[in-house]
Structures are given as C-alpha cells and as structure tokens.
Image 1 (cartoon, rainbow, N blue to C red):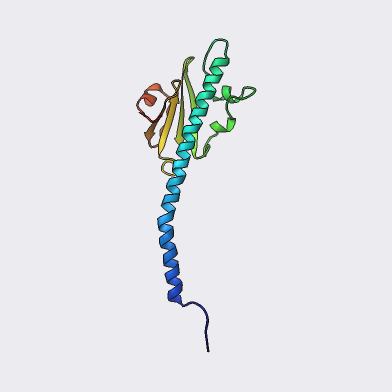
Image 2 (tube, one colour; image 1 turned 60 degrees about the horizontal axis):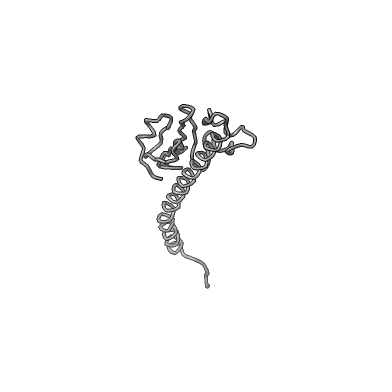
Length: 152
C-alpha cells in the first residue's frame, strides 16, 4: 500500500523554516514603514512651511496665518485640509500649526502612536529649518522648537 503525502515531521520542519524567515523579515518591514512615515512627515512640514510663506506674501500687511484653518479655508487652499486631520493623522503623523506673532509660527509633526508610526517628533518655524526630537511631544512654543536638533 503506497501512501503519498508528507509526514508530521516534514510539515513541522517547513513551518519552522517559515517562522524563522518571518522573524527575520517582519522587523525590517516595520522599520521601513517607520522610516517612510518620518520622511513623509518631513516633506509635509516643508509643504506647510511653503504654504505659510505663500499665505504671508499674499497679505496686504504681511502676516502668517492665524491658524491652520486660514490656510485650508482659503480659495484656493494653500494646503490640503486633510493635512491637519486628527488622529490617526496623515501617514502616521498628526500636524499642528501655531502662530506665535504676526511674523512667527511653529508647525509640529508628532507620531500618532510613538514607536509604531514614528520614533521622532519634527518641527519647522518661519526660518524653514526642520528640527527633530526623539519620542512624541507637542511642539507649540519657540523654546521647545529651539531645543530640538537641526536635521535639514
């Protein structure tokens, strides 16, 4: 009687090999996702900074927008309204815009879920310099922004 098929031991070996490959590949895929989210956050901050500068240049008396709604509510909008969406945000980051004075502002990008969607918080001000700090924090004052590390 000729039986065809796999033995239990052969199946267990195949499952063990697949588990080993998954253990190697999954952390790399998760890290790649975090890197992509962080790169997108930096790019979005550049976009918001450019939008704020365009808004300021269009004013009779040059001034930055009072809030994010001023940039998203204009016709045409200076930046897409979905950029400032609440949690889960855009590509794992939540963006805030704070005008400090008519001539200064701070925009922050913090990960929605720290260590999952991102590992760093980013910020940009009217100088256009992007800075970062480890972890998740809200960037809404000049002192917090100045304490961050310059990355671009």
